[in-house]
Image (cartoon, rainbow, N blue to C red):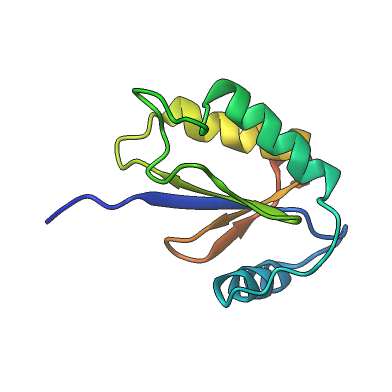
Length: 121
């Protein structure tokens, strides 16, 4: 049995977006539909921040990326992480998603997580 990548994506959807709306956006992406719109500044900021810490062009030795460059579209960034990805990388992704008000999608089980800053106690 071989290890497979761990896949996450971050999504810039309107305030109040539901997990089902995120899953629908993921499905549209998988079908190759990427609307003609300007990149969302939240996505641009996230991409710049995550690749400043973990470059994807080129992906150097020890990179967390199974696939590089990252798939970046106007409303999301998809990250295919190596199976041995350090927890620190995942925490950085979560932190940056919160800083940029992006929702997280876990492709392994279809779970959608609002950024920690949007979770109310």
